[in-house]
Image 1 (spheres, rainbow, N blue to C red):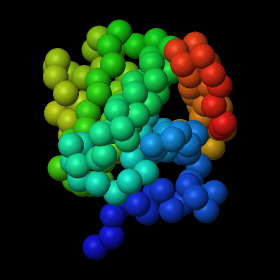
Image 2 (image 1 turned 120 degrees about the vertical axis):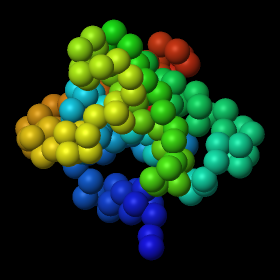
Image 3 (image 1 turned 180 degrees about the vertical axis):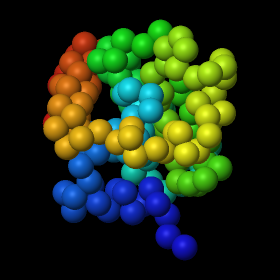
Length: 158
């Protein structure tokens, strides 16, 4: 069985993943297919690896830095009360971050998003329309550029 994250990356490289936001040095930024939590974003590692500690040290540090910059941009665009950062790998073992903007009352009880039933998390009612997707990816891409500029002192090729 193939790797779903690698398949998504192939789609990005072929220019046929509408959820693609931008490419960074260590990974690809994509919006989640379902936006049950507005602004749900993923950061997919370019290297197919199963554990963070298996990445070469410099690459690992850059991957963590870039994830943090992406999360900051998500925060600035969606203005949540809290961000959840998750690097799980229980379903898809390829390293990828889940970045969830959270607000009070977004789940029936306090806790991780994964406590919601699968049929609610992945309900097609939460898929953005093509227009919404275009607007969201454009806004997030622009904000990632601004965060890069303000934090690192240089822009990035997007």
